[in-house]
Amino acid sequence: MAESHSVGKIPSMTSVILLFLLLIATTDTTVAQTGVCYGRNGDKLPSPQEVVDLYKQHNIGRMRIYDPNQEVLQALRGSNIELILDVPKDKLQELAASPDNANAWVRDNIQNYGDVKFRYIAVGNEVKPGDTTYAQSLVSAMQNIQNAINAANLGGQIKVSTAIETGALGDQAFPPSKGYFRSNYREAYLDKVIGFLVSNGSPLLVNVYPYFSYYFDTGNTIPLNYALFTAPSAVVHDDATSLDYQNLFDAIMDTLYAALENAGGESLDIVVSETGWPSSGGKDTTVENARTYNTNLVGHVKNGTPKKQGKAIETYIFALFDENQKGPEEYEKFWGLFTPDKQLKYQINFN
Figure 1 (cartoon, rainbow, N blue to C red):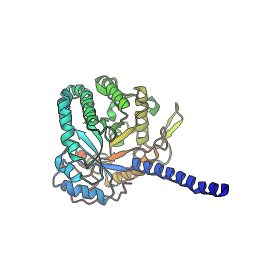
Figure 2 (figure 1 turned 120 degrees about the vertical axis):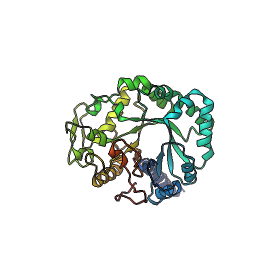
Figure 3 (figure 1 turned 30 degrees about the vertical axis):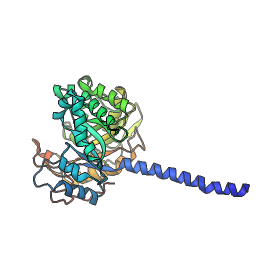
Figure 4 (figure 1 turned 45 degrees about the horizontal axis):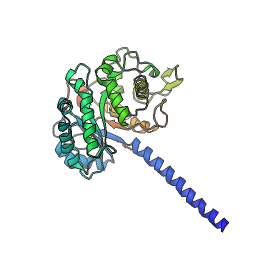
């Protein structure tokens, strides 16, 4: 009996280990799935239902939308697509002013769509310190939305955050280990946002654009291949950490991590809520460069950064379609992965 019992344990333990490894692999794969931002500032775009079908066709498992458009939310019902839903900035003051307003917003746009997989609520997008009304309302709006989410018993499913721009980083935040946030951002709202996120276990959403760092590099110190993930070797060495950087995306991410540490947010994860490369309208904006950036990005974010090796980065590519109504810069119109007739501009595997 002893031998039989012992032998019987082996497959059982093996099964447990295999199940554990499978769960880890599944979790990592889920985190590493790349989403796509669905903006609608363009002419002759497909209907929301066609868009949801397009996501399914190309195995895009995550979406970001910039307002609670009811037709889009209706199309997402039962789709299993995970969603970042934005609260537009012009709603911040209203939501900050009254818990009842926040409760109504959550009821109308979240609870009424119980079969939509909400992942994050992004309360405001790229609020500037100089936008006094928005900046002063932001954290109160986040707190009221969080309370409404909790009251609806959805606090364990949906995280509340806000999306910031990398312009919040200081001018002297180089190399990455010297990352810090500008004092005007911290004083206006960012310190309170970080405190809120730490208290609620929510990630910080950041729109990360190596393209803009490259575009505004008037001194031509940033090589194109460094911005496109194609540099053959390290371009930047950080003496303080002995870490090497072969691409600009990693350098920006680790600068953000360092800035968070300096502001009491060392426990926070970062979700890249927008990134991409335009295919026309500006400096080195070609279809080939857009393809190179986005295809390399999808593979790269599975592996983390030099500072956070092996920690997959949840990432959303901007954007689904070219949006000809955007501007004023011409390149603002050409971030799309698809043309309005739903054809890919170039081949890309989102997972």
